[in-house]
Image 1: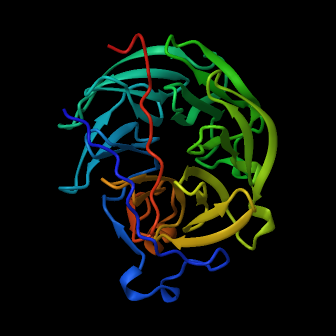
Image 2 (image 1 turned 90 degrees about the vertical axis):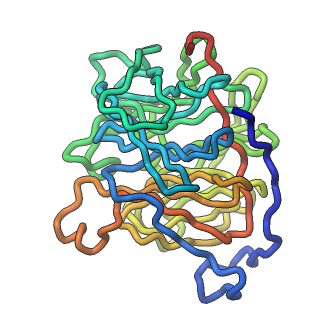
Length: 345
């Protein structure tokens, strides 16, 4: 399949840095829209836009599915993975029918082109991230510009709750996995290894350990895949919001879009000034992650959780667990990357 070229063309309409993003603030021609684009699932997470196919991949963690949305038709296809919770999925460089996913404690290679539903998809374990004796699982992950896969772990949840709500602290880590499948711990210990992003210059890495309520920044050496000089660029506790920061992406201006788990919004943060710039309300009880997609990378796809809700919570937010598309934001995202792997054929 011929690759689709990246075209960065965005609306020049922007609000001032201090203006919250609510529909009433915005001229009609630039009204932000939030559209439900999938059915409601369980714990939907880890949206990853594939520019080659113009499709959105995401996972349904505890139901153990990799799902793929075709925005042109609205069709979602699903592949069941019989290997434990599926926390994240990314495409593999140079292939059209291979994916790598965090599943259980392992990094697995999945053979699936996404065209048809699979009741029990073919996969193989590429490498074990943590020992079988550990009470942990994989969580969020992304690929850097050089094709390395950064994959985090966390303690298993108790009663479906995470962070301050139930899982053991400081049992997780963030790993860097290269093309030969060698893994290195880069940040440890952490409690819930979550959002990751690199700036467009590839010299700064942003990272979230959710229960800290903070976004950390590091100087990033893209040649070596190493980091240094940690500093805090945002702290949710310094706002009037509740919830914890979860998945994260970055736009071409260098600002961070962060899903707030336990709440119904995505926030926009300037990591240079530590300012909260904007907020987008999502009609679901708990927002989990975000990714830019679409031909121009100007649509923000937002995953949400419908897992372990009470009957009352489900009644209040029947669309929890769905994926939403936020349009008319006036900004483009940064392209995602595919994992470079010598053993993924």
